Image 1 (cartoon, rainbow, N blue to C red):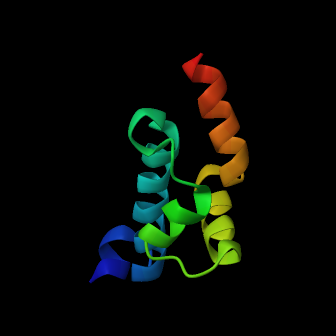
Image 2 (cartoon, one colour; image 1 turned 30 degrees about the vertical axis):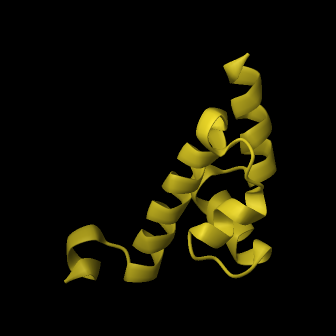
Length: 76
């Protein structure tokens, strides 16, 4: 049902949701500024940096560290 409705498999949808939440957390330095990228991806259910980086890059087109740097520049 998921495949036919969304045109994606469950794993892809789950990764997209996790990455969207990671983007929120990386951009919210007031609440999550003291948490590392590793802490964020582990709290979202990723077990390794490589799987998180791969999913993050597929969804956003950039690495988590590049996203974080961009978010910090935009905040200033």
